[in-house]
Image (cartoon, rainbow, N blue to C red; front, side):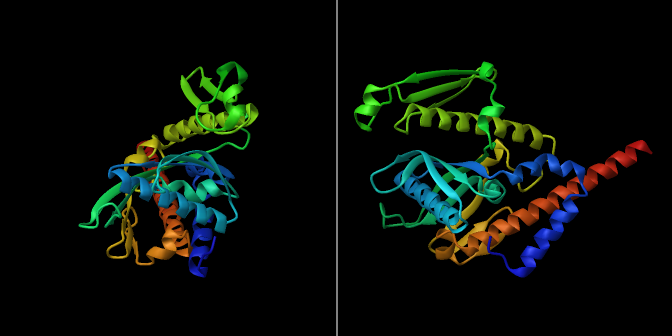
Length: 293
């Protein structure tokens, strides 16, 4: 990541301090994961929301490329004007989950859309970031999985239409179901289904861990955090504001290109998270000491 010297030193210092607080490891131990999955969904705003969702996806794709991360389209539902209704992307690279996890939430855009030049519209798109275990199959016992193969629907040629390349996978204990039919071979679809299912189940463990911490945290990575408005992109005033850390930048173009301005915001989010975590652990320690007295 491209950091200024002061930011790099501050992050290093905060991480050293964080190691002194044992409870923090339960949340941050996933930060070393080199794989995660990003979900994009258009929200309120019709076509404009779909266009914005597509722009967000491309923004993070450029960010991933700049950091040397892999970018795999698992599922993308596109629209005619170039936007997306929804998408699931696999991202791979050193500590990619740690970098991207606080991008989850509702992103709001304010601008004059191409579909209506008469006034400024407000639209939304949501982003989710799920941790992906390094070896999904090891986390999913065969006895807990029910798998079915079927013929895929839609474009793809004779191989897709005549062979059972699609996969439906059920996690029996939780009833969670995933389907995959994007790839041309059954093996590829099965592998993706395993990854998808493992990520969903791991996210639930994250939710359970976060439920033990204070709900007053500004930075959370639980499923509930996806419904919170985290950032506003005001194109008219050339301004992007992150509402959790009150950070504002006017470098709209660099930010939307996944540039160093996005790096800067991510660094500030990580700093805030470490500070919040340490303060919370310290408060818990004080409470325990008072109870003993």
